[in-house]
Image (cartoon, rainbow, N blue to C red):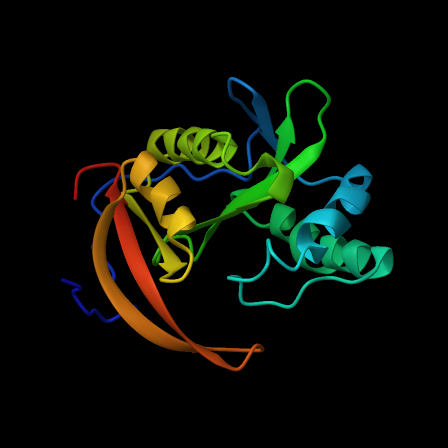
Length: 194
């Protein structure tokens, strides 16, 4: 049975946060780091893949120029702020970009998002990357994180469960620019005692 919620509900912060800006994290098979200009071709492959982007709110990128513009105008400015967790997921063996994981609305919903290149699905990379970022967020004092997935994308929900998140509620939202109604399942993970 699904519980319906107000997607804007926010828990109260009870811990001292020591936020950072995307500190590098080394995991078993991965390096989580800031995006770099060398990632542009892999960004086009990732952000341009129709299947990878089916359940994301934006349309796929079509050209290298669009990928470069996205990197410079959307991603890189995050690294100029006081606090940001906007990670490129790269293979440890060759530092090649295979996905991303980020935290949106820091101090509000603390919403975790992620995507992985299709050829790396089903191998535990998304869970590994998310666990590593969650450990960093816990260390930095964030009280909790949330994450959502489209009900038609249960694989994303499986990643949330694997990193210890618990289902909280569902809600519907009209997504722009795709102009579609989406039902989301929302999960939460308590990190530092709420």
